[in-house]
Image 1: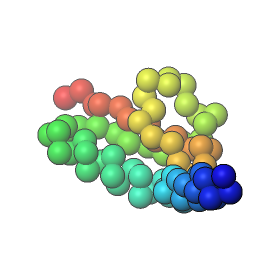
Image 2 (image 1 turned 120 degrees about the vertical axis):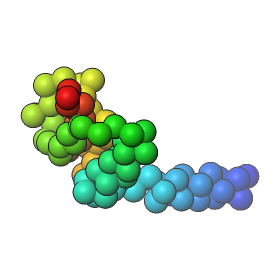
Image 3 (image 1 turned 180 degrees about the vertical axis):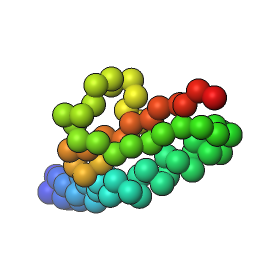
Image 4 (image 1 turned 135 degrees about the horizontal axis):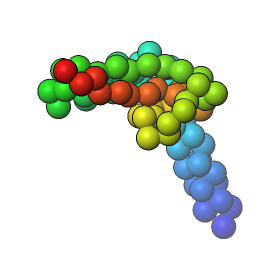
Length: 77
């Protein structure tokens, strides 16, 4: 039973390490690469604080422990 409890605790700790928050600039670069891979030519990605988010549908990422959001807006040509 002690081994099982130790295994569960070890897995929980390992999972939290894998889920470490990314810096905003790194996450923005990853999102930007995915957008460009879909051949979207005119768009805006912006890092904003939670208070600056007016439309949750524009949020494509969260960073800095959830204190900031990355918002996406497609620009019409």
